Amino acid sequence: HQADFTNHLRLTPMGTFRATWLSQQTVHPFPLHNLSKGIQRLALVTMDGFRDFQPELAADNLRKLSQFNHVEIITAAVELPDFAKMQRNPCEFRSIDIGRVLKDEAKLKVFADDMKIRVGRADLVVVPAVFGNGDGAKVIKRLEELTGYNICELPTMPPSLLGIRIEEAMKAYFKSLGGLILVGDEVKQGVFEHGRLKHIFTRNHWDMPLQAEHYLIATGSFFSKGMTAHRTHIEEPIFNLDMAENSHRDHWYQKQFFAKQTHPFMAIGIESNTQLQPSIQGQTIENLYCAGALMAHYDPVFQGCGSGVAISTGFYVAEQIIKQHQQTEQQVEGATA
Image 1: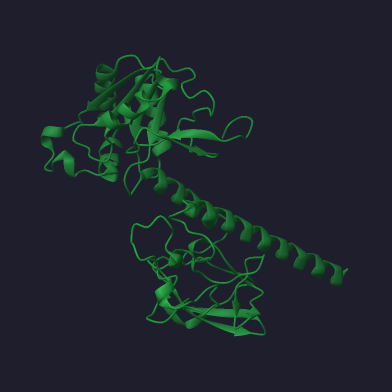
Image 2: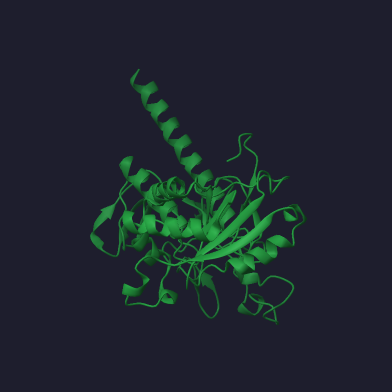
């Protein structure tokens, strides 16, 4: 983030800018009010044959911005090392495939030498995120040492290595705190008692109930099966939580697919209180919380806020759970004092 904790801008593969607060260390933070600060020559570099980043398109859009009128913008395509020995066409390579090739130190040095020849001098070199698989920041730092460039990564088409890195980092941190991830499993049923979720059963653990003090449901919307649409109604399929709106199917959509107004079904979700606790038949479930696309009253597509809502609601729920846990501990300490 910026030193003053304000937002900055990040460059997109299309050559446009998006405001953000946090970026990974390999992503160049462009100042909000002085985009080209410190940049006289900008290089947009891709791998020869790589289809997920078109530097010419990004360069054309950057040249349209008045802030870059004084900046020389060039593009280059660097050939992958040992290209002649590869049995696959480079057009078939995705970011993960290239990451495996350039993880080799010798090949990375060859790549760096070719980059210096094709780019020349540059204040900032923009490349697609194709370096490393779990250790991308380390590989980028090594590439900067080999070339002397200040390098900025751009996300590519999924699977994006930038996304994979942050996902792996979060999972590793979660596990370091004692968390357990049941990969490939899914919750199928829950048992409720006195307004609380007592335990859950998963597809792979029907004979072993899983119990916790607090639960968070973040199963997403229709495509991830967080909600299921039937001919007459929409439901949350695991716990049958109360829906915020469940009108007749004729009111789920606009008559025209590309209408100026949003399709109502996109804003349908489960009902919750200010603590983001859902309910079943009007009864609030005290130790169950919801977050993300499962929630109602917003349209992630029309409003463009899907990721923001997912992050903010997840963070808010975590704060609520921590607060409840601390209060419980204080009550226990007070009772035993």
